Image 1: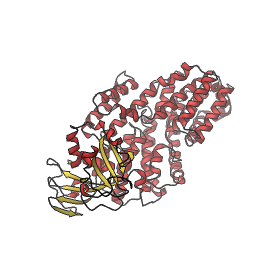
Image 2: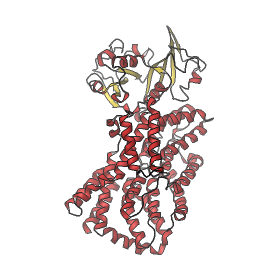
Image 3: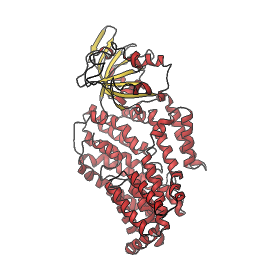
Image 4: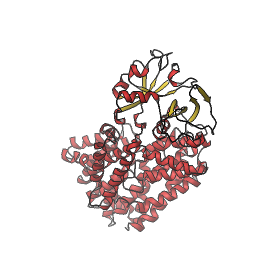
Length: 583
């Protein structure tokens, strides 16, 4: 018991200070428990075969498939077209983010909608600081509605059977999660804008929003033919600026919104990578170099192709030469989709002479991208921003089928989502390697290791001892006071440590205390799941970290806005949990 308690305190210290990554701390804890003989290797590694681990891994891949096929982006763009004003669009998008986040990772949802919201802020001249934090908070709120909304919910659900309690139902948390989400969204709509800073200038290059110039050719079957630039939605829907239109030998610089496009027009646009790729895949336009490359590669599968940003350095052999003059496509077997330059280039993309500091958006087989080093410096692999929209219906059908099977048949959720992933791999909707790369392995290692620690915590008698002490102290508070105490303590723990770690630490203690005092453990498990999932007070939650820079926030901005939202969550939880799950 003494050894386990010492390791427990040490783990709490390392989780809170993050002197080591949380997954490394969890592995050290696991190793210490085995070496000290507190648990057997079989007990230690049992967590890695837990169905929660397989479910989480599969959900990461399913979410990645929805991103790869552009499903989530398409939802955001479709809704943005229907809104009548800027703030109406923002609210509609936030509601959409909350809805999408109920079924996908809140971090991934925030990442997908981040450029969409920043583009909206630029076009409508809205302060990014007023909408970035609500974006992250909306995704966190939406995750409380279903058991797959966050990995924390799945962790809590996976631990309950260890204590002879049924796992969480798919929509069981919605009883409390849905009211929290609805009231939380009203808070984000009405209160948060008054508390948020009006930082007008968004960050571009530092946060993956580098603007590229690209020359897109209107296909013969493109829906853009005969439509004005205003009607095409280049700016409204995709956040792209039309720099010029080349028609035959004529170049129209800065064409007006009423300029009508025709087949064969070359539209020179400027915008972020993901917006450029989205427009290219949906608007019936193409890049000449890409078409020629695809012909030479006989229409290679998008899953086999890579996309990278490559920097022109002083020693590059391409310096001072144009893409056409250097025979870039023939020489490297790659196509250039776009060019980023501090000062906008004036010539056509193919004839622009490259300068030091230019960044090329380059697409092609991955082995050829790797061979670029020495000629260009590869800054980043941005392959995940490519979208294969033709396979979007398959991704949606498979994802929805997995959810429906787990809801309306005896098939366990783990079996449904693993089967769905297998189907996506078999149909080449997503490449297996990309799927495996999308898994947050550190989260899985943390959960599996802490499941083993829960075994040691129980078998050593440490959990019982702590439960007896906590029970003796909190018994005068009654069940409501005990639920409030565990909720507040969990919220406090989620600030310095990960949500999953906080839930894994608190849940065994809460269940033991409830059993000691003769209460039902379920309301306490629900309270801890809700408290651990809703981390608003600091920007340490991954979704919040994504918006911290683009919103140009300070640490105290999260304290100011997040404290009120946390208090709202607490009040709603305290009212609904005892009513729906009696003590």
